[in-house]
Image (cartoon, rainbow, N blue to C red):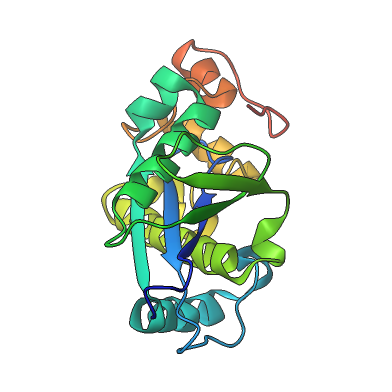
Length: 201
């Protein structure tokens, strides 16, 4: 990529809504000389398509990085601020410093460069789409790894989101070390209260 070309990084996160696991953020600077067809909001893509695009992004992007905020940080800071922290870490981990960062959503983290928040940017900005894919695939893989150790929670299927199956497992087995204790259904279990499928954060 030419040094005169502006380095625009797209940033997005995955995992704001789940009851368990970290929140993961990614930052991607695409290379115009190596386009990646098919980039889109990760939620609109099949798991198989996300995996294919994940490999393409890693191979063709000018720079990319993934970072996370832990369950402990989510509980200490709240999910909004933990998401911003993960985004900060992802941008800081890039091998080059971007001239502009485009962030999916309404709020930008504090960054040492110009930044702009774009609502639904993961559907309109290719670099943000790429970041959403890296973040989603990385987080899904982390939850699948946790499922090997904690199979009773069904993480492979729901990735920690508050499905009826997950709430039932939480009520039956209690909270694992990877559950977010600041989220209402987990807090209710820890307090000895009963859960219903309608309980949410």
